[in-house]
Amino acid sequence: MTPAGVATVYIIDDDAAVRASIQSLLESIGLPSESFDSPREFLRRPRPDGPSCLVLDVRLRGVSGLDVQRDLADAGVRLPIIFITGHGDIPMSVKAMKSGAVEFLTKPFRDQDLLDAIRQALDLDRVTRQQQQELADLHKRYSVLTPREREVMLLVTSGLLNKQVASDLGTSEITVKIHRGQVMRKMQAGSLAELVKMAEKLKLPSGT
Image 1 (cartoon, rainbow, N blue to C red):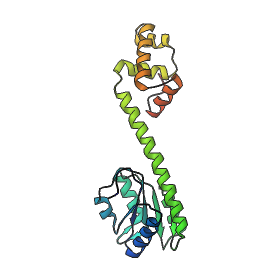
Image 2: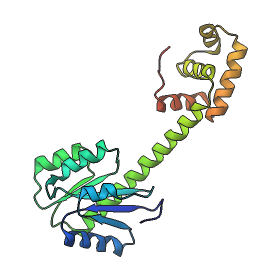
Image 3: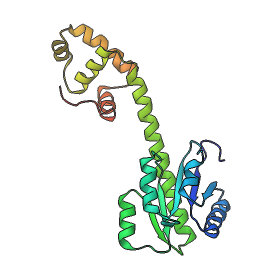
Image 4: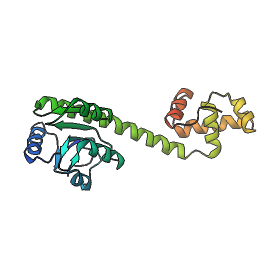
């Protein structure tokens, strides 16, 4: 198995020759890959925590790659998909792309086209993972706020002045300033504008 943190390309195709060809291509540029002849085999395989993408044949034994795309999403497996097919048509490719596929390549495709699509997919997954990590960190910081600090954060990021927040909460302006300072410190916000962006990412209510 590929070590955690290293980019990996997964291949699902019931044609052993196709799997071997793609793996050989990826090996030539030093990109780790794992291949499977069925979606079930892929789902059973533990996957390391690192950037990845899936090269998926549209027509597999007894199942459509488009169904696999939907099943993976339902199972919570979120990774960019590159479809390959020898029987592609425009409606099928449109459906695949609308469902989030990165690329739809018809066999025989150029090696460079596949490599370009894989690089794009891995870059996309890196960005997605970074955003998910940043959001997780943000939720962790928010979780340490006291209930009153959360109230102050909500009201302040809604645009209210300290004295208005104090009036809403039935407390003094000095107390609000203290809570506001604690919120800024715990959330690691350098400015009110930054705190507002954090509230938006956390999807806090925007009104009072």
